[in-house]
Image 1 (tube, one colour):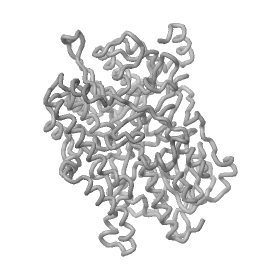
Image 2 (image 1 turned 90 degrees about the horizontal axis):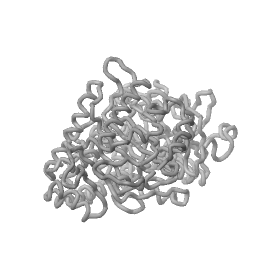
Image 3 (image 1 turned 120 degrees about the vertical axis):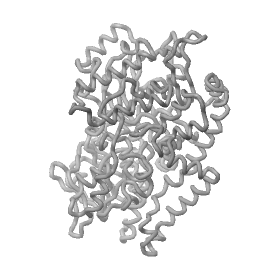
Image 4 (image 1 turned 180 degrees about the vertical axis):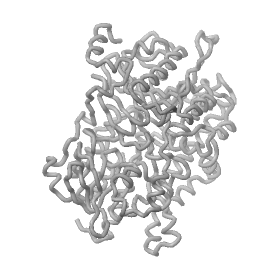
Length: 602
């Protein structure tokens, strides 16, 4: 535990808004793997900007970096341009409070596609992951029971312990849980081939040329492979895509703490409740991953999520890619044939290339960066209609000791299994999730917001000083536009964070007094800092009408755009959000294939 003297030293380093407030005025240090800020890789910025490239990638988010690595591996000279001072996009590590390194936006790792991990040799390039053995912890707000403390639910990889934990609420649920998990895992693994290939283009199947239809064979093959793997689970998969998650959970279970804990995965990052049709796909999207071959595992990247982006960048650089920061793009250049032929930076610098890939959202790419006269009016209307609503406010917190939960008290500052997993607060019943959602629809904030807390420093001791910890609070539901014309100013942000902290205090007394500093990111801040339109972490809602061949829009879902030579490689493209890298890799394959068809030679 930090002594009072040391705590005073920390406090003296922080300007007043940090204490119980936002740290947006603090000058932060941002880190990637090996704690390197990538200002230029593969030559000086001046040299890089005088060259012509085969491919320019807008945005050094993890998908843009993945695309650059695959394009460079394919022999295409590639340049990545990042507007911020640090690479990583939403998968970034930043030292917001002195001595504390935050995974400022995304915060846990599981969805990164195994082939990318292997192809790019990310372990060799510095990626180390601490695998969590406990999955979820849900303490209850209730009077102490026979044990002298409130109950809690802890789900771990220990089947016997998990059975006993669930059985305290329902013996029937304890028996059903493992069958439920087996079915969800089977469905998640079966749709893997769909993630690793471009979606089937309906237009090409219906009226495309024979060559275009033949080009669809890999996508069709992937769909057939997934259909075969789903087998008898195909009806359950269809139900997940279309039915409310609470309907599915009610069929399996009777205890509210278990149902609510599982239901959080169906709403996380999404402006939906468990009673929203199709909310089940959001859950499947969160259980389809693996870490180092362990199916369904989640982990913390050592050094924070910036280490994931940093390892991908290192792989891209090793193959010869150039990565520049503080180079915001103003416009995508078009040649006389209305084909993408490079970019113009905000300072007026022109850089030419044979093609351009954008890691930005579809709205930013097509409505802000692309000359509008080059896009069909119908396409522009489709892009304008994309749903970017977000319920998320991310709060990063530096504390001088671990939270001490009333349901699982400890006399030491040593992490227990419940500290290492995702901690669910205000999640005792699914009704609480709905109660938090409904005020948001009116621009208001509920008294008990849904809170998911992670403590990566419980396993990764490189990101916080001795005895101290880093907390990641993923909270919802918070509206982008507040009622009565209010803005998300410092006062409003601090009032919301105070409400969240009051709620945490109900579960663990003394939490508020442990806080050293905090970073509050409501939807408008997520949009401003990370370029997430609407604050949506997925680059657009993961609803059935915005998935697969409808992502980002029905008329353009194969990473290509109406502008020849312009591709979308971020989470707004198939298969969607999360730190998985699949959109970047798939887009790179499509783009390099198109270039080869045009007769390109290395």
